[in-house]
Length: 214
Image (cartoon, rainbow, N blue to C red; front, side):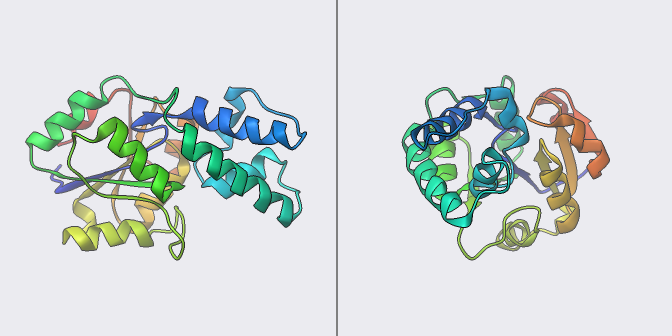
């Protein structure tokens, strides 16, 4: 297959951030006198942005003012504590090195808040030529809406059919399909059971398998 660029989701794809996301949310819940969750529960909460994470942790029925208060508290806490237990998945760095050597365009598109997305990529993956790095930004719909994904294609001047999109949840696969990208799922992420039903063309078990597609 011939691709000119690869766009990656961040959490659950390049970075295992589940413990930091869970810890920040649990601290906020505890400060408000609310029940906290085990880390594993957050696999089902993450992937659709910070607001969805808070709404899920509140059971989906909380009043709007409570959601807004906890969301603001979460963003402040997570901004300070997003890089404590998070780590790059095994095999990601050698794979990225090979992609960079092949002169492929590399980008990140996440539903994580934009400034935190940029900070995490700079901290953990700053040696790789990711451009652009987009998180959730006011004025842009979050994934699976394809608008931000297609903005990357426009900035690269690359046809969508020549872009590989890599992610770990149905949100990512739906984004790729809506944008006309090749949707590739990764089994090491947060919700691998969603990938094939959502329409992933292929699901890989390790990062090096991505290179075989190229």
